[in-house]
Length: 366
Image 1 (cartoon, rainbow, N blue to C red):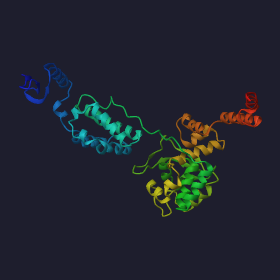
Image 2: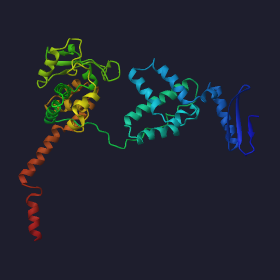
Image 3: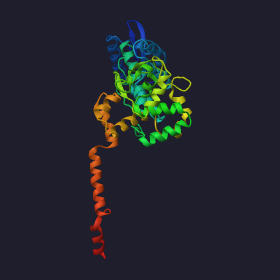
């Protein structure tokens, strides 16, 4: 008998594969027990063994990561490893076939409550979904419980950009130079070239050319803790060097071989953001900005100087002009300037808001 009524009045359903016991569950009603048996038998017919589904999540994660180490990029593998650390213990000790979208949603909400950025939670969810998708392919479970979940919305508004103005950039350079002249110069270069931090770390002596014009050839990126990779767009690009930073770049290149890293510390060490921020007392000198805001600064400087947006797109390495237009919205367009000019001319003509009509109304009320 596959369904047996217990002394408590509940019903115990037993699933067997042939004559071998596979799994059992207890239900309040006989109908629920029968439905469960039907689902499990259908799963067996489709090649999913319920006995495999009893394996714990924390026992299967290392098996999945071993396979992932040979099939994904280094950066993706690092993100996948974070699943082991971020997954709540209450979920990691569960049998994998017992994990539902409810448990996954609770894990995502917990990360959001702890202050994790929405983008980081999305990466965690993507890795977790890959794990359960692997379990489905291995016939351990039938469905991926992550697919029906959503990432909680961030409580804090996303900070898009906080660029320096040209005057503020010079002030930042002066303040940073009091801490470390070399690092101050390198960040000034970042503010005038728009290089990503990973690209700045990867520039070598041969990437600086002066014919037909001074420029940096951006070909690869070297994120911290990750192997050398292509740029974000996957393409090389050329970034001109303005006169403001050209003498600095020339001095750095004069002491480096063609294959040497060009932008290094005064002791010749590779750049690391944590050490740079600590040395420069970043929170004080940068006044709430991120290192990545130096990239935004460059785009704003170029556009403010009248460089065509299509040219800025090429220098920044944007795949779409829509990305470049974000900076135009931040700065304002010529149409905005013309509209403001009209407002100001009207204000100057009347002398004050409301003009003579307001004075006439006041006299009539007396």
